[in-house]
Length: 327
Image (cartoon, rainbow, N blue to C red; front, side):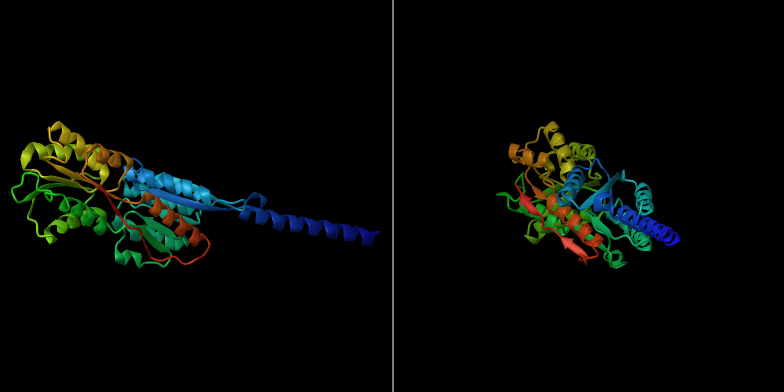
């Protein structure tokens, strides 16, 4: 009887131990053997036209990758254009023990700070849209950058103007006089789009004159304000308005109309991103052209990189997506 009782007790203990192990496995893998990966996403500012399309595509594409056994738990945060806010969000992701982070930097120069935090926590980072410096990208082998080469986008803007019948010289005086509405000058995209759009014209042998250049911080309202100021100051001297993104170009359209100027006749306007509103404006004749910043290709590439990281696969340091002209 005692032997039987000992066997029963031993069996009961074995069952308890097996149950505990299985419970631990379920806790790690999720209920029903489903493995759930935590993904922390921080976007520099939610009300940016282009990044709104981008983040929504990130969310929807992750959903398409889910299976009966693999799920992705996304936390997507608004950086509100504030680097301190974004750094706090990264600290929160680390505290939550996310498996990977996708970061659209508020300030590219802060990449090293975030990389150091992620490296200490062992959490890979996929940087998107705003390129960290080359030195910062060498800080760890578990970070990568997904984006498009902004030099190409600037060049394409310039080529759109260059290839017009009058090469953008609306008043025919032999000089292409332009207004440049920049994004954030600290951002490499703004720097390259500003430089290379004009370089495409000067490399082709055309004379240019910069009448007005100010930062619009990617915002439509500022684009309208700056374009209105430039038009009031320089009037018919302006041949071309170049905007570092379509959001600001949308604002410039309103300023151009208010100044009784006509795109395609006595002034030209180009942007970057090919957001739906800009494509519609081109079709309506309110905008000369834009450059497709492929949010679908970039967001899918970023998600694919994140998935590789959580599966302990190697990822190239730079993952480039080409721009395309839209006119």
